[in-house]
Image (tube, rainbow, N blue to C red; front, side, top):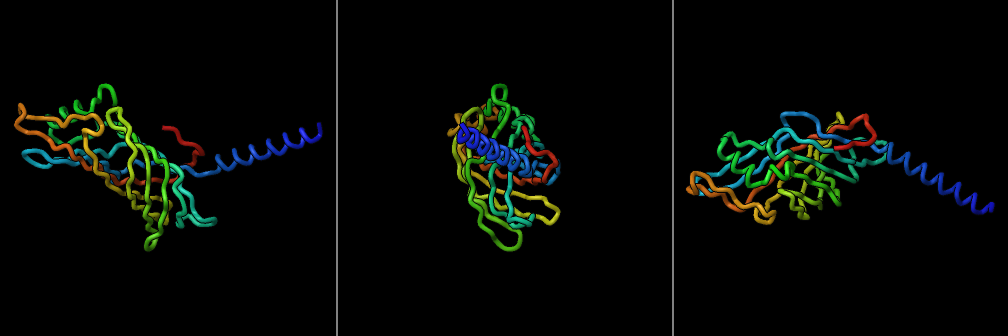
Length: 207
């Protein structure tokens, strides 16, 4: 009986410590900034095209060496959500056809969730992250690998930039056509981004 009570006490202490550590872990959220950019770029039979968005949301969990706020050691989690309708090329016809091709009436968001990351220090406060994650477009989820460059600023902000090339057909998206088929977009698309994270007072973030 005493052994059972002792084991129960140890288990409760362990769970309490684990919960405390989880709550104490700082959460970084995407800030509202004109410098935040998410871009889809591609080609067509007539010209290149870009669709940009500066409004999206997400959170991340970065780890640093004890006592330091700039020596990045790990990226434990990262998620971002982009509302497809926020992507705009400045050409209404292209936008409407692209939104339709991306099935926005059924799947409103493009979502990315990190599964693992390896951090390599570069010069200064710059870091290269070799990441693996799941990208969901038009309701189809695919695993992707991506190199992400991070810069840790002295004010606690973390700027992440990266690019990823994909084929629309891999996500069951049919490359849209315009002008009664006279203009056809290519299958290959490049997703590029600049995301600025800041530490928040909240202990847990929810999208």
